[in-house]
Image (cartoon, rainbow, N blue to C red):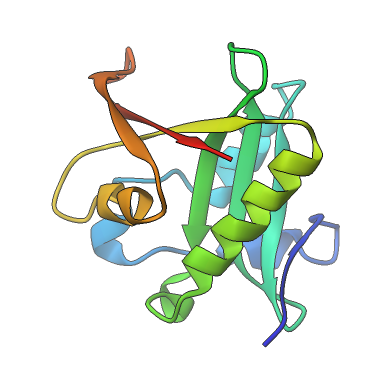
Length: 145
């Protein structure tokens, strides 16, 4: 199974927009359509489809953080039909590789706490809690690349 990050094109945008997390996860991540719309107003934003054997199965978006050499993992999701088989771990490794290639040395992200929060996933991938929240109440995490 080949997993790659691919640019989203006119041929794939509808498929990427139709990807969804499980119902119990929907309060923890914005839709891909909203994410892409927001990215168009953020000059440093990068967004990609996570593709398994050429088919979109997830979405990732990042941007420059305020601190030099740090990226902000803004959005990350794997479609509900493709979760729990290791694709999230593999996709995040691809994201980290691309960030390193672009010169980033660390990455930050934030999560909403709750029963279906991705906090455990990020901690298992090497992120550490920073002990503070964003202005919007999301818990901040950081990882070295």
